[in-house]
Image (cartoon, rainbow, N blue to C red):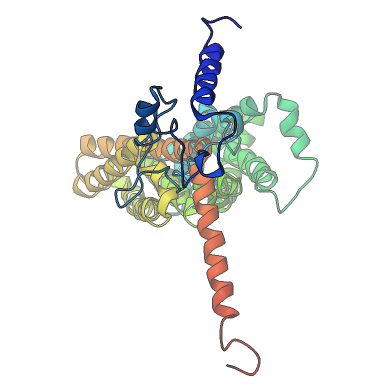
Length: 400
């Protein structure tokens, strides 16, 4: 064995110690917990002229101490970290990109504008009706484009119409969009009737389009609430923690956002004398949106955190501020065309911020394992506590 190797050093120490102690040691001379032996402690090693390896009467270096000052290893388990195998998240984050957030906004804008157009139609405000119908058609067309873009192939949208599944929000939403789109399109085309000639075949169209457009506008308005809220149900139906837990509030938030965006269109496009329904729509939409956003950020405990931090928190705070500013400007600027236009722009921007903020908040909650693990443990603990309370002393059929 080479004298330069560590194993050789250990062997020489053992040989020297055996030469000092002798081959026939008594039982009490063994290195035990009661009698460590002459070469197992610093003092015994000095008497024998050997260097102990390692020293036994000093505290090991780098070892944590127990409570109370006594040495020893730490016995409690270190705090758990919410990770997963191979560093992957527990849930697969949504693969949706910004086009789905844009789809949420344009769908709500189409629904709110349709309701605005119906209000203008019923109250005989042609500028308000015209602005609502044209915006509704443009928004629902953009919404269909974003949806097909996310699906990847236009044929997939057609395939979804082959069945109607009431338990699937996506299937129901596809049929809602299919019913709303043509009605909004006919109502918008009817606004071109005054440009047609009075005689001939086009003259017939000039006479038939206005009543047909009025009927189609009312059909679109009836379908609009479902179009405005089904996207909230769609998000809440997923396994994404902060979307799923907010299932009572998301449809309310999206309905308020849709009303506010439709009101913004009316304040931007209609003269102040015809913007009365738009102002009332703005107040109702802001009330629903602000109430729902406040509930989402305060009711859900840990799952409210993604909506209050990061990109989602910034967007939702901006949305609340713009909504409040838009409603205030709409009420104060009844006779100011400029202030009404600025208020309408603020309401539209607020709707964009709200939809994108809700979208980013859900994606954030899916990426961090703690938003899945901690609520699950809390729910399991609550069920265990309830079971203990039900099956505790005195819970039997004869009392206790």
